[in-house]
Image (cartoon, rainbow, N blue to C red; front, side, top):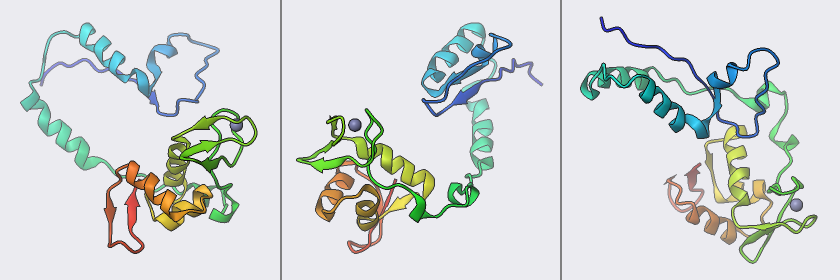
Length: 175
Ligand SMILES: [Zn+2]
């Protein structure tokens, strides 16, 4: 049995999460955002420069981890006892958070703060994936993003290069 160092690290994927501690400042070293993963791994490499396992020896561990992975079956709508109809639809303004932004000349525009951007729908589709489904049809996208033009919705989907299943009618795209 090889003697290997064990480190713990809590990675927060939500960039808007606030990290605060009132007790031990060393917690900041153990809790970090996903954007810092590379830095943390580099720190560990400097701390433990001696290679204990070769890549070939690590392969069975990697395979076991992937095999043991179970996808989350958490259903937020069920958990909060709400339905899809309770969700506010549309694209949220990244600047002032007002719903919905308006699709105008290939851009999303906020009618309150006039903020303009091309990719505000990405965040809305990430929400759709978390709240409703991993897949979306053009019709569902129009409804969720509040778009009247199916052609515009289709163009957005094409630009994202999403994989899809099914024929041209009712095709489902993987978010
Ligand atoms: Zn705005």
